[in-house]
Length: 471
Ligand code: 6PG
Image: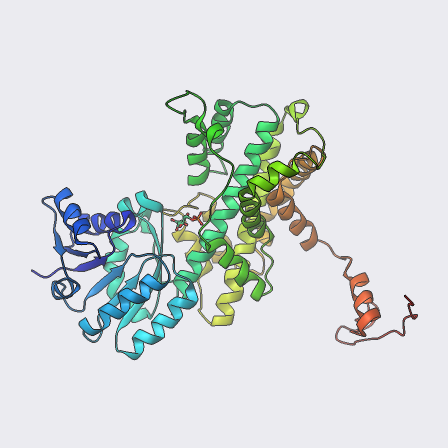
């Protein structure tokens, strides 16, 4: 019997996806560049409908037509290498799926290249880490609708389910799937940073790690319920087996990153979309990684004592609101970017559908996403998520505590870049009049760039003969 599905690249994500697909009743062929890994994997999983292949030729031959081959190798050049090796072995209409964290423009290029050769391509963002891959990830596939239809039964059966709905929809053509996965990751960065800022405030107030764990565990029962809040509680509970100390206290404060957050920043900059919360999150990782410089600077640059113990009363409730409101801002910005790019690329994106598949399987999974789906289902043309009735109420109710938290942090020299950037976005966006009148005056002053006037119709431009400035 020929296999229903093939997977190339048996790193942990690949292995777990294979086991997931197999567990849904499909026979799966596997291939890995080093044959030992294939053999080990097959030996470790006896009695399963798995076919280990030593060569790419044998692998391709073992698959039923049209072949469905998922590549799970490192994003970048390795994906192109595997594709090149596959091309001469495949028949018309065979399907290649790239399930890695590929840059969407690479996906667009591969999509066009393979279509030219009569092959079909799906660029699918897969989120959920190792466990998600095994038990049910969120999948964000992009490519032709007709190719999606062929893949749908397998993808729907392996995806996470929420309220019986699989966490996978056809996102759009070409690079749309990997694009939306990239934004997912940007939002993931934002969520993580916001949680870390809450943690830093609790720490400054003198909460023990066990107390903090209890706070996050409790938050996970309410409006902030989410996978990232849940694992934060669990991470704070973890003890170092050798010293018995809370493990987080022993972990170096130097964040890593693999680039999807920076891709999101670049894309937002290119499209003039404000994603301050995500930018703050990426930059916080960058500054954290400059540990040596920070240690040196801590000897020279002064600030207030970072002690919030006097403000401990009600701090948990206030930080809760600051986190919740900032999270709303982060998603508002993320969806603004998705909307902007979707329109530019004519991807015809379903924002409600995107929010709904993020409810399960992926790293940012959260109850909160239901409200985003509702907002876009109620008003598909919604300009800004903050203005949906539900989020408007959240922000109006949280804004006072949010301000107090940011003020407290600033007053005590505790960096809260994501909380404060989110609040500035909120205050800017709701400002009837900003200070850009003066900015326009400056532009016209030095460069005759002209300005519009409050007392004249929009679109009429004026220039002033400003006084000459010497020296
Ligand atoms: C997911 C994650 C995953 C990502 C890691 C690491 O959705 O499962 O987004 O794809 O690679 O979270 O990302 P960083 O190393 O950049 O933190």
